[in-house]
Length: 272
Image (cartoon, rainbow, N blue to C red; front, side, top):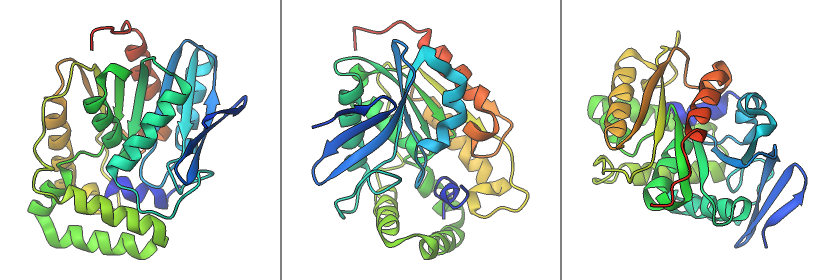
């Protein structure tokens, strides 16, 4: 089991009407929440198995000066499913469609937590022209799993088995597909990012009773190292440590609101 997956155990496209967003895809429809009316559009990607509710406190902190869009990925919350296992590329394609729906031809600020942070990073890598800036909230990384396997493969496998035993079949299939991709030999090689500004927030608090390897002292050392490596691939930005657990958006929403404000203060770039 991974920390960013374990959080779920805790807790023609267009506007349907004010407050809701609907994006038709092949065989299913994504559903989300559209809040505020500001000129700056912020799109939120939640962690594995989570949806818009994960960002409730952050969006409330932003207020009406921002347009905040939070949605559920295929098969989660109110979003539909075509029954096909979703991989990283599928989620990125859905995110692209959502952005094109809510902000056609415009740059947005992307905010991602955990697995959502991995998706936001990869989207910015592939489509920097669509991104004004990104906020990574204790993000997963492409290389983290190989780093954990190197440290304690038996524990990582045991965590996986425990998680899979608790997940519904469709979500378990998505998790297996994700593990397969992160286990690939080239997943750990961090590549330089395009010129996209970033605020990276890393949680520092250790769990009193670790559920997974990532929550142990040894796992946290690796987690921080992965974040330092990820941050080194960006040309500009801020890496900030936050004294919370993995769910920064719930434990310290003001830290996320501040980071979004910093991205909003950066002028829209026409050169990417």
